[in-house]
Image 1 (tube, helix red, strand yellow):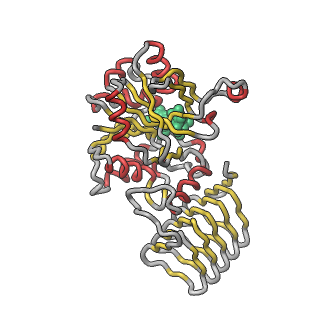
Image 2 (tube, rainbow, N blue to C red):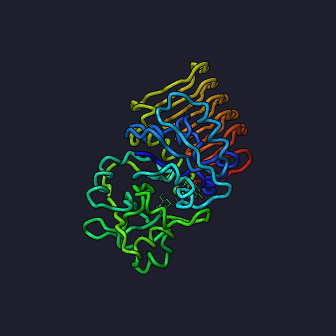
Image 3 (cartoon, rainbow, N blue to C red):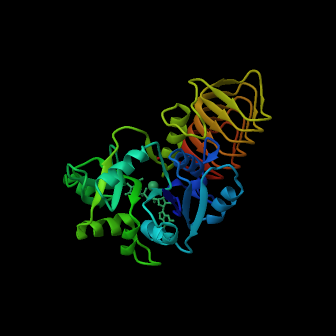
Length: 353
Ligand code: GDD
Ligand code: MG
């Protein structure tokens, strides 16, 4: 089976981290997010994946174009301007002649695709949507189903009024993974902005086409759409709550170093911590995991770092304290600064929310 991964969004909610870098290239434990997704697809023996790109497409193609040994052949379907989720798939229709799987490109999951395909076939569905359960469904596509899994209603991002009037009756939401029969792309207009969520799914329901959904009760699922979720994903991987085929599993207090790191003997490092190459850890620095530090970072004397992610080339000045914080590429943090629950890139700081 082939897959198509939707990676054309602007990642606006991840700002300031995504100024100049597309969401799929955001580093997760020092690998671009999308590389983890591709490793997951490979696990299910998917040999070919279309990347539907738009915003900052060159950055994605530049990286993956040079990578060897990925094990999945990548094809690019580039939109001049974003065509929406279904429009992006329509744009790649020539590559999708058989049953295929479509993915929102910001989902980190280990949901069982073999189980999903078996369900799709057993129901003779035209589209099957994977469902996951969340506490607050209002930021997602809410999916109501019959007892046999047939979709009754699809409500994309229900308004707070709908939720408060009890019009939203379920916590099961669209996990952003679909198995699709190519013929449904006949309903999607060419070269037009068109969404699965507000366009194709409601249309299929209206036409009485077999639209099904499968509830996944266990397994890991996260939409890495905001800095808080991004930090959580890094921590979950370090704490082995989530797993990536790229990284293997972390030991409870494990500390992994890249090449050419210098660590002052007085520094205290409590895992799980991953440190990239060429990093300098100064005197009396205290790092308490889960922490991910990318390459070329320096932590001056007396720095405290706890539950944090540093991108490449971050320099932290003496005695600064950072907790529950993400710092973007090449950012300098001044001496004695205190940063709590923040996402910082250059001089731009956002509270994690
Ligand atoms: N190629 C392309 N073109 N990709 C796009 C476009 C586009 O025009 N618009 C969005 N995407 C990609 C984004 O890059 C992202 O990977 C994915 O489609 C979903 O877009 P988001 O902007 O992240 O949507 P969302 O998180 O608010 O909601 C969607 O995902 C939820 C699950 O995380 C919806 O599908 C919800 O129904 C769902 O619950
Ligand atoms: Mg999303």
